[in-house]
View 1: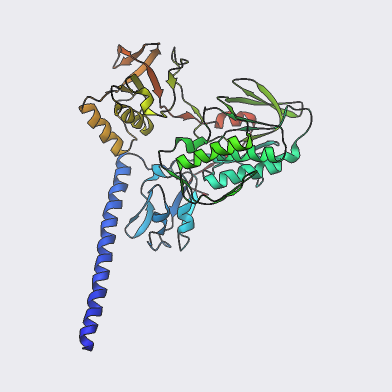
View 2: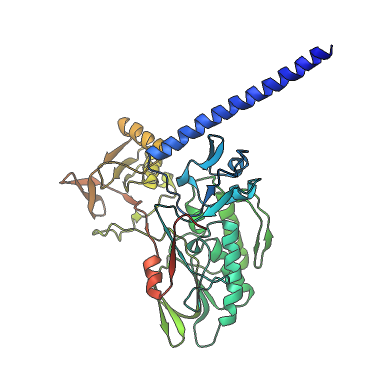
Length: 431
């Protein structure tokens, strides 16, 4: 009888081990395939803050993978590693979840450095009176960006002085800028909050639908502690809109900072709408920068935009999408799904090189089905009210057109800030 029970025990143990090993083999195969797809697509460079795993300490528990809302991590050869670098947004939950502290969060890689401005622990740059908080300073986490905005205001309010129009001009309306604006109200500061786009939320606004954006509580002036836990993009943006309405936070949308000058002991912030003298400046804009433009006649038309918000609004129209990255492909794909929409994707190069395989496959499938057309080796020449002129393989074409969506990336603010005198450090895979 004892031998029987021993046999059952051993058999159960062997079965559990076998199932575990099978599961690990399947996970390894799946994650290895995803890594290979990233390699083939040239998507190995994370955009900002990202995890680096120490393989000598990693025990392959998978806790970091479960914590990552972007599915950017996987298990390969029994160790965790970044298998979808382009998906990583610097969420940071993976490092907190690791039971053996084998994950470090770093900026840049050995091949591609990232310029990070030098700031003090109080978020002041080497230019006295100019502060940086949030994504521009390398902190993409919503909770920490908001906390930096609040702390920066708490420091710079002591520098407020008479003789200027404002105590602080805040540039950028993402989590850091919104939090800073609330703190400015709390401290009764004269503030000006600028946002170059027509929506609040900063980089969060541009996340894909239903992306998880926040996993920890955050303290906001006038509001108190906000306990969201894991929350999707849409809910977080709705929360911000409600906060703005409840607190009366004033935001100047579609106003882009163009320069900052020093005059008579104070700063003059020049924008596309006016000039503002201020005691201090808080730069809370993101790293997406100003949208890169085509610089062609007619681009100032109201029908030209630089991101796709709602594909349905273009139903039944002739739409030109310009660009060769994932954002351009995803815009063209989404538009082609709208009934009666005539979609053309224009890209200056001969092939799409750094795009996700699933986007490339979807684009090819839709092109073969006649749902959209792709013009490689093409360049927009001019934009008119009812048509666009395009050079395609050296031959001019005129296309009927109702709307143009330019997805050509952004111009980082680094040169502008260097002109102001702000110093940067290029980081290659270090924290």
